[in-house]
Length: 244
Image 1 (spheres, rainbow, N blue to C red):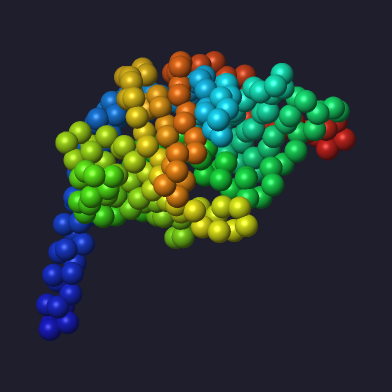
Image 2: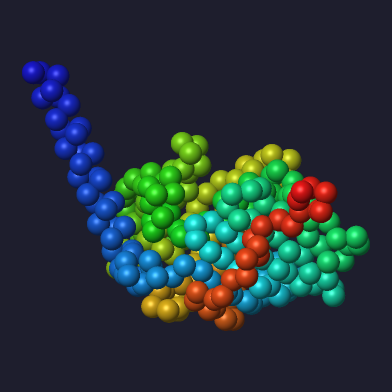
C-alpha cells in the first residue's frame, strides 16, 4: 500500500504531462488546417530555389505519404535526381553521367535523406510513424519563448520541436546529426512564411543553421496539392538483367 501511495504522484504527473502534450498536438494540427484538410493532403509538388555556399540551385520536388520523395536539382546544365519510395533505400541519378546509372546513395547520405522524406512532421505523424512525443516545457531560444516538444523515434533519434505559444505553429526544429568525419553537428531548422495549400498551412521558406551558421535557405515559389503522380516516380529503375 505504501509503495502504491508513493507511485501515485508519479503516475499523476505522467498523466498530466501526457494531457498537455495531447493539447499542444491538437492545437498544432488545428493551426495547420484541421484533421480533414490534413488527411486530404496526400501528395505535393513544389518548385523553388536552394541557396547554399553562395550559389543558388533550382529544384523540383514531389512528395507523397507516408515517406516517398523525389527531388530534382538543376545546375550547370545537368540535373541530379534523388528519390526514395519509403521502402527501398534512397537512390540517385546524375544526367551529366553516361551511361545512365541509378545508384544507391552512400549510407550516411541515405540515412539523412530517408529521415527527411517523412511527409508529415512528427506532431502530425505521431505514433503511426513511430514517434513518441513528450512535453519539454516552456523554454527560451533565440530571444523568445517557445513550447518545446521532444519527439523520439526508434528509441535513439530525438528532435526538439518548438511551437509558438500563441499560435502553436511549428517554427523551429533542433537536432544533432553526424557531420563530416562523424563529428556531431547542431542543426536548427526554421520554418517561415507559412501559406495555405489546399487548406493546409505549410512553410514556404526553410532556413537551416548548422552550429550557429546559416548554411542553406530554401525558398518555395510554387506548391501544388495532390498532383497526378506517374507510377514508378519514386522507385529506383532496375537494369534489365536485374529486373528479371
